[in-house]
Amino acid sequence: TYILQNADLVRKETAHLHIDDRGYYFGDGIYEVIRVYEGVPFAKEAHLNRLEESSAKIDMTLPYSGQELIDLLDKLIAANELVNGLVYLQVTRGIEPRNHLYTKNCKPVLTAFTQPLPKKAAAPSAAVHVWLTDDIRWLRCDIKTINLLGNIIAKKEAADQQCQEAIMQRDGFITEGSSSNLFLVKDKVLYTHPATNLILNGITRQVVIDLAKQNGYEVVEEPFPVDVLEHADEAFLTSTTMEIAAISQIKGQLSTSYVPGPVTKDLQEKFRQLLPQK
Ligand code: PMP
Image 1 (spheres, rainbow, N blue to C red):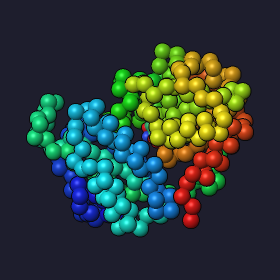
Image 2 (cartoon, rainbow, N blue to C red):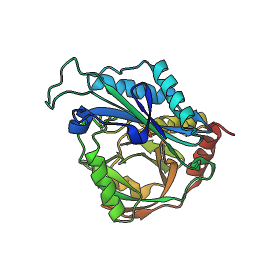
Image 3 (cartoon, rainbow, N blue to C red):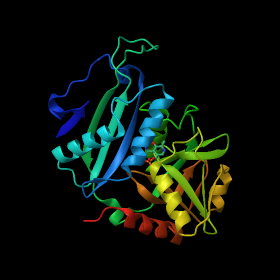
């Protein structure tokens, strides 16, 4: 399989990493994960816009324009003959001897790979169990940084408790999942944390909010306290890789369970209809 190193397709086995890459020393970089359905990258403009925004927020200039990135991704997808799966792409600030302070000569480095995945949306996966824990992350969760230790610690805690995902609370308010956004449904109204500095504004989140509104659901983007989880009718997670995943059980700081309900199922079906078909 091939990976992209800047604009070059390189065989993965022969690819080399520079030891002075700031991504390696500091996690000084940003990334995106884009789902590919039937060879077509899903919501690629939204992902590339968010990459551009993340880049600007850390005072970095992307090494390629949006169109150049689209062309590079197409080249990678074609080289790997990817039909259903994902593209991971990251841009690190570049290569310099280790020093917290970077110089303006630092040239950003693009790396991208593909990974095949079953086309899940066709048959939504079983409901997931989630683990409620503290949100110990920093205050710029809106930046899609490769620096993911807070998320990794939460995910491992969840896995240790046989949960597929962690959901997090900061100061008593639910923020998001370790690699997903959380929605609650109560009396057909959707509730989710607003797109502030405390969460990553997921592309799937945005697609689902638009879909819900187009289909007549009210969507409330406001922080809600932990105990609201107990009063919801339904709960689901959204992410590029999980798509829309119903939650059947919450454990940890609070215990409650849900039966995957009609609103979640309706949105899963509407989401499926958006995807490129064979
Ligand atoms: N929140 C966090 C912390 C994430 O890491 C992700 C996935 N990268 C998401 C939300 C979901 O974002 P998206 O729908 O763009 O995949």
